[in-house]
Length: 327
Ligand code: NDP
Image 1 (cartoon, rainbow, N blue to C red):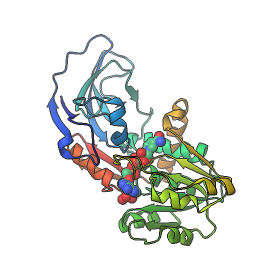
Image 2 (cartoon, helix red, strand yellow):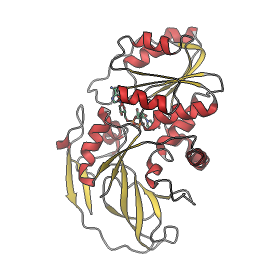
Image 3 (cartoon, protein in one colour):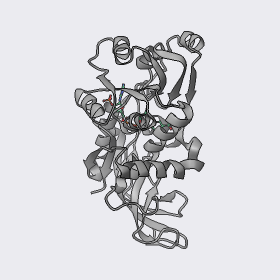
Image 4 (cartoon, rainbow, N blue to C red):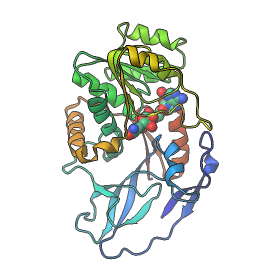
């Protein structure tokens, strides 16, 4: 097996030299064990802040992959079946099954299995439960989402449209803005070239916003909070603009809109709904099959390019979900 390890905990933006490729000799599988081979890898923003909490230097990088079972001593995972594996950035792994989850049964042939890492996986569930349970988005309401052309954001906007909301999104390039309009966003703008963020938000929705699905943090959040309507809800999902900071920034003064607009602001981690994942995944699959939810993947070919794909995703190279193929 080959595996990418973390040489040194990230400081500031991750660099290629933070990673090292290693050959790992795998043992023969024992009773109850399974050998899997990765086909698709995911790189996700959480790997940047979370690695320091759960990894030691020298460990294999954390992450989820779609893998095929090559050898099996566990009837729950027959040879040839596909699983989600939490083995991390490694081409092959031996598992006792605890970190494996079978893909949804009856996965349609024409739907790529890599979607289990994106639209019909963790990012999809984040959009689904965050919008439903934290934003409580309702028909006729106005939803704002930043990081809108990414894995989670592009789904937040589309699910909000399915609910019957007006949707405004922001993203970091004109191509991404075009993409957002193509998948049904009512308004979209490029936050890098827009000049005044306040004016862009007001222009996109002069009435303000009922829901704000927050993926970015920092300046954007400070400005957006002041555009919230009475009883607005803010789902704090991510803060990608802050993950590379070496010293925490001082927040702006958010109390005034929180009080006078009587807002509700709540952070969440998608695992909160782990007991309802199947409900979410089945709904997401249904919408994809019906064509109500469009998916887009930014595919990097080859395991050797994983660190570059991760660094690229953090910088905004991807539209939709960043995926790496094993070969
Ligand atoms: P994306 O596919 O959205 O990829 C990351 C994107 O972030 C880039 O494409 C880039 O797009 C944007 N970005 C990078 N730097 C900045 C910046 N300084 N300001 C604004 N945008 C920036 O990733 P995901 O969809 O997987 O994740 C989106 C967010 O959701 C992240 O914050 C992540 O941590 C969070 N998340 C939270 C979960 C939870 O359980 N709470 C679960 C999953 C994700 P652009 O070109 O637009 O700048």
